[in-house]
Every structure is written in C-alpha cells, then in structure tokens.
Image (cartoon, rainbow, N blue to C red; front, side, top):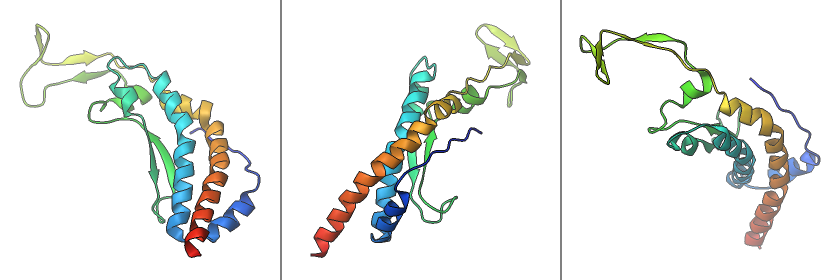
Length: 165
C-alpha cells in the first residue's frame, strides 16, 4: 500500500483549541476537514478511470466515518468505488486472472448465438485507478486537511463562544 507523510505546522495549537470544544463539535470540525481532504483523491480517481457508461466514475465517493471508536480510534476519510451499478469496480482496480465460467443451475451457457458447457474468460489487466489517484494526490490531500482544519476550527470556536455569552 502506498504511504504519504506530511508535516502540518501549528498542530499543537490546533489540538489545544480542539480540546476546548465539546466532543461532538470537535468531531464535526475534523470530519468537515477530512471531507475537504478526500476531494483531490476522489476527483483524480474519477478523471482517470475509463468508464464507458460513467457508472464507475459516478460510484467513486468520499466517505467520512466520525465514530469515536472506529478503527484507528477517531474520525477518518475513505475514498471508495463501487455501487449497485458499478459492482465490478474491484475487478477493474485489481484485475482478474483468466478463468473458466460454468453454469450454476443449468447445463449450458448461451453467449450470443453460441451455446457451451463452459466459457474461458481471458481475464483483465488491473488498472489501479484508485491506487494511482492516492499516490498522485495523497500529499495534496494531507496538505488540504491542514489548510482547512484551521479556518473550520476558528469558525466553530467563534460559534461556540458566541452561544455561551
């Protein structure tokens, strides 16, 4: 798996300010910044995937998980692909080896005008559109998280202290 690291200056001050907010508001600030951070990767994956119908590109989404006890211990962002219409996303990403296709409930398969007891699928080469998007835009996503966290935190702090007056 690809790994991206970045230094965010002023993180100590941000963490101190986050502790002043109620937990729900703190998660909201982080989740909003994470949503912004995932957009460059999502957009790159959408633009680089070859999609005849557009279903695969439309299925690429940014999803945030804000649960306190999620894997990793806190809010996180994922860029995912696949849906009911693009059920094949994982095959395009990771590829498929050549394999035989046999009927499950019948004695034969019909492909076009041909009837056969099995069909040899040639496989498909992996396109790695999600991996390439992460590798090319991961650093930008981390930078964007750092840049959007400060303003969102300031707005939440202002709102919080305004309500307390």
